[in-house]
Image (cartoon, rainbow, N blue to C red; front, side, top):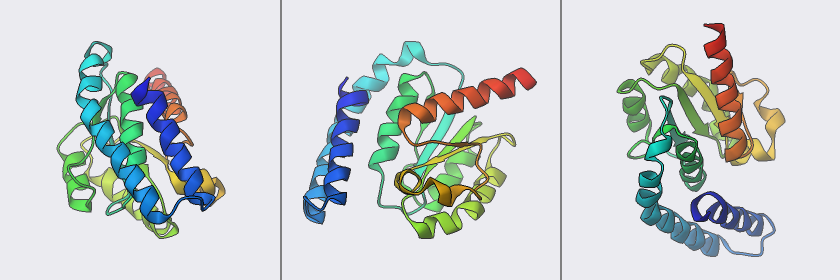
Length: 185
């Protein structure tokens, strides 16, 4: 409950208060930082309780390289873990760390969170680069994040296999996509 329901709700409230300008940048930053620390402290317990659910599906989840927004990807990771996925997150969100992580594993999917219009402009090249480095030529690309939630129409030209608004929708759509691929093989 804490990991899958309470933390995402707190994060949504912080986001709403940021948009409504009822909290300052400093207050939101402090709140997000405390929330991330709490998630990290509880994460090992959550991961351990999910071992019996683990299936043979793996995903690398990362914010766009060098992004400052990592809370959403941390929450998303927990939703995939709960659904039985083996989840990997790069040690940091630099392009080299993400590239090394995707090149060193055989992954079913790659999830990227987009926060700004500048990132959106560079997203097609990033997808092409990371797919090229992947050990799986059929890797499925999932995109979402704050900018997608705000302006999904801006993503119409992006060649991603799955686009989603919420962690729940991300898991559902990605599993449906993977299921269709398996049926066609």
